[in-house]
Image 1 (spheres, rainbow, N blue to C red):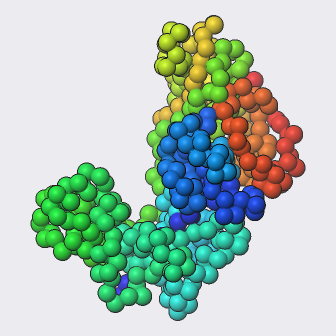
Image 2: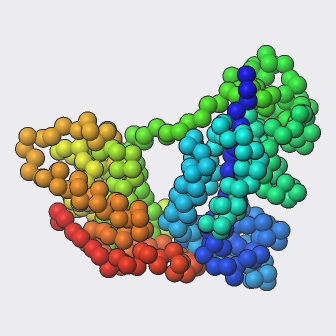
Image 3: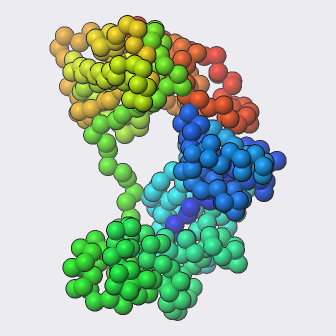
Length: 430
């Protein structure tokens, strides 16, 4: 049975690389990216790590190091990262029709049929193409199982001599690579298993594959046994080209400052509803239920804690943004309390079902065919030119809920096309 090459292509320090891709002057500069409201470091590049800065550190704890070393600091810009991710994934799909998007910055790529081109050289070409077209550096690990390709990917990041691509299938014996891989660095081995295995003297991947199958299964269940079999070169984890549709979709945020005005909350929930509806339509679903919730701060001892929510059973399952905004507003008026400083809100769309399975309500007066065409056109435009290129006027322009993002990069290049339609707004059903 021939071995099928599987690559895992992983963007290096993805969020930081996205910021660097927007500004060539950031080359070789230490970069950190902050969480919502600029509180915690959620991403950093190698240059920042070399200064001793660690991921998930509160910003104030490392602020002196950052200032002293002129580390470049950015607020998280997830819309930018998402768009760059899509560009990278689309390039992967140009090199193979069989791509499993595993996360925002990595994908498994099945490469059977390309052996005649030389798999290692082919992946070097892919890596260079991604760098040329997006300025995002990637690392590629290749093997005949997913677990081994993840192992190769981790090792290639530590050894620059491989120039970003390590193909374990180029070696007759991979014991050396297994021996230098610690148990905790194996895909699928969590901290609990790491601690347990270390207690039995099992320190490396090579130690693990030499264990008896019966013992592995008794200590790590059948899932652990699959991992061991993958490390031995026997594929047990299949490619998954389509993700299962979600049964519910939530969009929620903490605010940059407290909101007491119902009009501000209307605009906020309209924006949240728009984002949730887009995600729902991406999986071709419609919602049966809409829930909104409001929260005050749980840390402010000077105010009474309030946590309210309200659910509406929609008359007809819908994916239409304007209709969902209408019901979100209705739910808001049911639970809003005057003179209450709200610090967080969210919307939940649930009871999701395929759009093509929805049944019409005989008393429905909305022209759903027309509205469905409108939201489809909006989605197409926004995917091409950027989020909110065209939007409902209900969303407003002030974004009163906006989180603290005082360090957003100047994405003028990213926004160049988007600005063509930046003033366009349309509104329906108010």
